[in-house]
Length: 492
Image: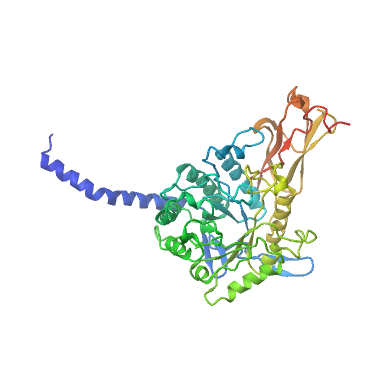
């Protein structure tokens, strides 16, 4: 049967008129389905955070050895883990981030290892973390930013590979019941956007991306430290950044919007224009010389005329103490001072200038070992577990024989007693070379490779276990072959 020309034109007109409506309907259906599939929804009531309608750390009070009792319920304990989607698109600087075991940089490996470590953080009580779409300084602190690490193109559109990596992290956080503080801009990187309109479009695109993908476990930090003089665009500076907070809040998808705030530099009190429009208040503790100042900043914020009951979150603090004797104890550091002032706290760990050789240190320095792979990381997570009443994880390590080429022993200590062993893997140069039946276990080197001692290798062990149905992966630190070069110090 043939249609007359006018009938064809009429049908075409109908399609042109109604296709946007049909497409919008399909999008709404997809958005609704995505939302229904999500497992974690963050909300705010007064000064407390809630996850799925239940306050964080419900009923938890931190009881110190000296009899002090401090409420933890409703706080958002977190860590600065901003480099989860990191890549460097500048070919001149990309070679700075090579993994020691492969001699290559791989952004997908970086995200995969981030995702693999998340359950171990959660077992220690970490309910939140900051992830930045423009990362952070890959050396911890920087005076220049020659690399290109941005999830945004110059016009404010999203770079798909970056957002795909972000999706993997946000999906896993949703599965684990974790809240992501998603930072949009970082000073030194905002220059990738050509003008103010591009900045606004980037904010709009990122907001719509989160909402249209159905994420209900994400809150925004517009930019890291609006006080930083390195921001190219005035709208990202403290005097005007409230405009972008309000822009995010004005965008809704299926009746949902995103809780939003921004941060100032360490030891700075958030300004009135920011506090007035924010859904929660962000504080940074970097550079605070006296832990009592942490308590003071929280009180100043709460005393502001523009303040209304909302949560306070410190999501960046690099050195929690200025006196080494204070350490991670119950007194005298910024972590415990924050808890005592009912403010969530987040650790910013990076490799110090004299530590760049040690791949196991730091959570911001690229390449990152995302596991709890150093004493400094363990000190933070152990105190976090104590304060939040969380079980923690076992500590996996490798002990090497001092006799050249003899053996190594994979050990485990601490953690809960009721773990269900799943798998133990020996990994060399980022390749699984053996699956082992138990832990602890001894491995003789000559069973691995005849010329093992004659070459440089990187060695770690990976334990997978279940606890109450949850799968957790923990790894030992990554060790360079201690018997290389042959005849070194590892001999009797």
